[in-house]
Length: 94
Image: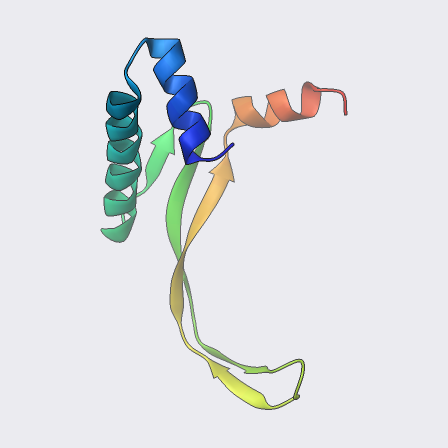
């Protein structure tokens, strides 16, 4: 599912116009992004939580050229699946 499919589903399920559903989805994602940018944790009960993990820099190697490269420190988002979602995913037959 992508963002436009989420907007369409929200619109039909909640009886909203596409424009209102788009604003709502955009607002939720923006607020989540801003919270993560501030270093806050975002938790959605039954789904999972997002947090920022800090990774230190290290010396690496370009796999094509085998040239040594320095990988800079970085912050990356990390998602931890909630227990309810994990159970739902593992109870379905594939």
